[in-house]
Image 1 (cartoon, helix red, strand yellow):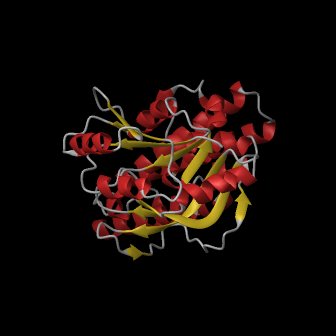
Image 2 (cartoon, one colour):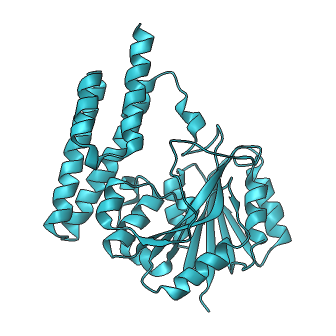
Image 3 (cartoon, helix red, strand yellow):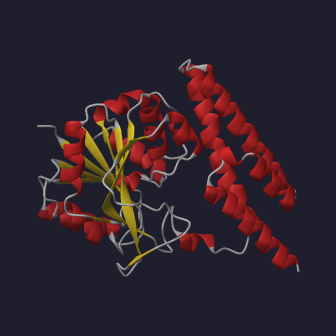
Length: 316
């Protein structure tokens, strides 16, 4: 039987960390280890983690960084310590369905080609109420398994780590990457899984993805900020980093020209978008988006439209 690890990073997560840990501990198939690394929280998160470790000393293992290093680096460092053959990634504030580990474990067993498996999820708020958000991915919960190509993933990187698990063998593929260049741990893992024909999406809702004003990423509440232009610049900078790293990986790994050409095209598109956003040539930006629509996500396009309308209204 394959060993199972759960890795979780925390930072000021006192509000929901109990619910997240309880949902893992109550799984129908328990993991062999739960590794949690706190990123120098200044609330009661560490004390909560200590209480869980005392209660479950054989299952839960905790550590604390001496300074805040960011969730991306914290996750990648923690992944190296995981001993399981299958490694589940966990946020600090979600709720797992009780059959999540067992269901995904069995899918890995039945499909040895899977390197990274993402599943469907629903959305909950801070009061545990489910809701819909038109900006989020809509799942049918039809239980279908779909292979994600490298091209589809690079253009539409919409698979959050809180809903995924990976084989430990995948970690060997990413160990040489310089951490300072990695925009997100889940993006890196999914990228290499897709390049090696091992990235899959299972349309089976197994996680409740919590959205609240303190989310590090993902929260729609974070989008209600006054400076729409600054928000778009920040988002575009993040995208540009992913495309530049993708290009660097392609060149170092000597991947085929199709991958390199796509990376170069996405980089050019992103740099042009940055230029138009910074100069506030908003309608030129919308026209640019439309002409390159096949290489943008719907969320990116709608975000640009929202920014344009907001700036126009603010200027009167």
